[in-house]
Image (cartoon, rainbow, N blue to C red):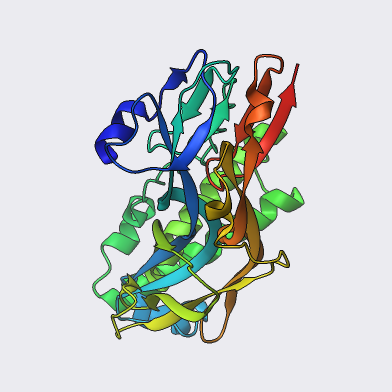
Length: 350
């Protein structure tokens, strides 16, 4: 089956002079025709986490004494935080819904477009190109400034760490006084225009921040993204999709070192169930497509809900048939399918 799909997938196939005689695909029984899949739904979790690294400052033990900064740790630390979790529906080929379209005479279905993995996309037209979601460019890494480049000779020649910390703290207070004088227009040497004033204030802010970090330490954040997929075959209640640890980050569902992150999928569909014998009652003549169902999807941890929303799920829907009469030579019917759900996006005719 896979070998046949590799030949057909991703191409806009020309089927001039054919009619649809659709049946469940059986390897070796095709003859002239096209094989296509309908998709089934996987719930894809897009997990964004931050790795937070704290490096203590050189003068951390003097932070409270000179700058009244409390709760400043002297120990380096690394931990993880969940920034966001998003859930989307993703379509993958359903091996139980592979169909063979045999070619006959007197048909106007001259084009069938498939995805790279064999899911039907369009008939007698070309599906619109998927819009690429522009990702925000990563912010340029800010160059770390060496606070010692702002230190005076008196500070650098201090006899002890305690004395150096005291002098650095005094320099921070001097910088703050200079900033206040500039913003109030009371400085001895005021800049001539707003641009020069901003430049001076920015330089003073940079100096203050660099020297303050010698007491408070530096906290850096690095974002990472993980993708986790779950295939719902029925309603799901509190399935462990993955685990999360503040020390280790994102973990596998069976790794007990982290707390569980639960996924629930509840069908919202009210359609009557499909008759399993319907396909056996008569020969299928036409293109089979999905009518996806809907599901309420929830992602939550023990103390926080990260996502709740309604998503299409093909497993909770049914299938229908576009009758063969839509594709005779008297009617030029064009159909576009959603390759993620197998449902019809647009249908029109001349």
